[in-house]
Structure formats: C-alpha cells, structure tokens
Length: 379
Image 1 (cartoon, rainbow, N blue to C red):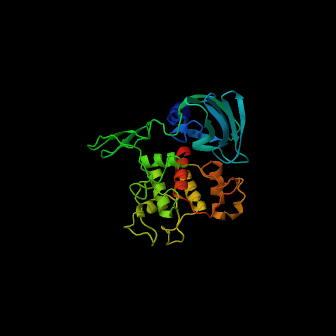
Image 2: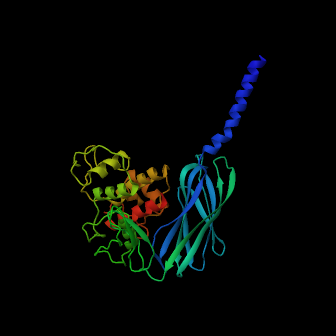
Image 3: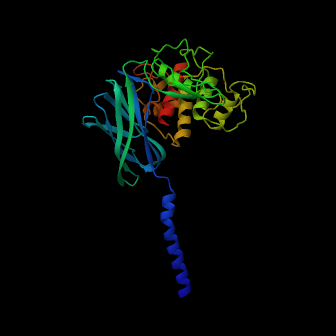
C-alpha cells in the first residue's frame, strides 16, 4: 500500500514539475502600432492602430497612448470590435486614454486583437513620436492585469504631399519604391537586375486624387495592378473578379483549389483567384454554379467579402454588431447587415455621404483599393 501511495505521489510531483514548462511553451502577448499611410504631409489625416498578438480571454481593456502634441492633433478613436468603447480624452497634453468592454455573458477575445484605431491630423512637419505606454487587460472573470508596454513608432511629416521617404525591393531588376522627394524610391533588383526603381505612375491618377497614396502603395507591393501599363481607371466600376483578385493577393492565399463555378473557366485570368477565395470561405457564388465574374460588385458585396477576409486574417468571429448610424441601413440586404455594421465599427468603410452607405451602389476601383488597404492595416 505504501509503495502504491509513493508511486502516486511521485507521479503527482512529476505532473506539477511539468506545469511551468507548459506555461513557458505558450506564446507571450506582444503589441504593435501600425500607421494607415506611408506618406504623411502637413494637414493630412491618418490613423494609428494599436494591435495585440497571442492574446487570451480579453473581455475589456484600457489603453494609454502618448503622442507629440506639437505636431499632431487628436481627432477621434474607435474600438476594434463590437461592444462598448469610449475615450477618456486627453488626461494630459499629448496623452490619450481609451477604454473598452464587451457586454453580456460572452467569452473574451483571443488570438490577434485590434484594440483601438486613433485618428490624427498632422499639423506641423517633422518627426512625431507615438507610444503605447501601458495597458490594463480585463478577462471574462473580471480579473484585471496591468502591463507596461513601451512600444513606439515615429511618423515623418513632410511640408507637402509630394515628399516622403521609402525604399523598395523589386524582382528581376525592377525596384518598387514608396517615394523619395518627387516619388522616386531606391529599388533593389534580384535575379541579375539590381537597378533602381520608382513608384508606378498611372497617368490617370494625379497626386491630388483622394486615393493616390493608397493605390501607389498597393501597386508597389503588387497587390493591385492597372488596367494597362499606364492607367488605373480609379473611378471605373470594379468587377467581382477584379476585387477577388486584389483580395487574394492581399491575403497571400497560396493553397491550390479546384474551380467550382460553371462560368469560371480554367483559362480565365481570374480563375485561380476565385478558386482560392472560394476555398478560403471569402466568396460565394450568385448561385451554386454561377459566380458572375464580370458582374459589377456592389458595396454590400464588397464589404461582406472583406469582413470574411478579416475573420480569416484576425482569427476573430464577427458575432453580432450594432448597426452604425447610416440612415439607409434598412436598404442593406439581411445577409450583409452584420458585415456592414462590423466594417463601419472597424472603420474599414465610410458612407458615400455623411449618413448614407448606399449598399446597392457599385464600387469603384479606388474604393476597392482603399478598403483592401484598410483591411491590411488593421488585420
């Protein structure tokens, strides 16, 4: 009997000795700051998103951010998920406190989390520092834990919209840059090229266009392409196939997939993208056998696909969201209401006017580029 008890005791001690090793094997949470645009000039609006990685059971939180009040003006802040979020405002000059909590008997979030997106206006040129100083996390049992973070980023603000600094890397001798002075970057070519490159210049996209920076950056990253070597057609309506192709490149979907739709042939330029997006659960057809690749994509269709991509990238389920203040939400199709609400809360989309989303409106190529850029920034 004693021998048996001793055996059980040794087993239990061995079990306890393994517990710290298991805990150490788990990934520790980490935090980051991302900026919505690469080129920021005086008077430009931009946003900074605070993100967490490898989080566990986050039911609520309080985030503290310091920023350079001499160069930046705080505009607004919003939570990265549905629930109840509010800013405590500037508790001191150059300091923002943002708090958020879920509501009801629901589990806390886990995985990769977007805590808050803060909107600024650049009021003076120069380098502006932004720092996530600390945060307090609250789990679903209402237990809280404070953490010192100290993650910083610097925003370079130019005097005008033509200035910016960036280096690009290109393949086969062609470099893609993010802008240097007049838009020329330093490119590093591979496979024997090694020549300098520049930001792709579309002749129909002036630097004054509202989506210029977004389109230039996505084109440099080869996530989007023009309708010809020199044109982008930013105001042209975008097809379902074109948008899916952009999304697949943005998500870097590589898994091979079989075609599912009778109107998507193996030789079509968009066939591979549609197959991959369908396999990933981002798109569905107009019917079980039809995708309608050449059909123009509506705003509610674009947002629904985007939010499915967000779920895939972030590992978070949308749940149910409270509808934003669009006066035409009653015109949104029932299958798209939750996606439109969640996308508005995440600031992935805006209305075409101050209070209308226009769900049945046809999306332009510039609008599609902006949505994909926003998705990459927060996911």
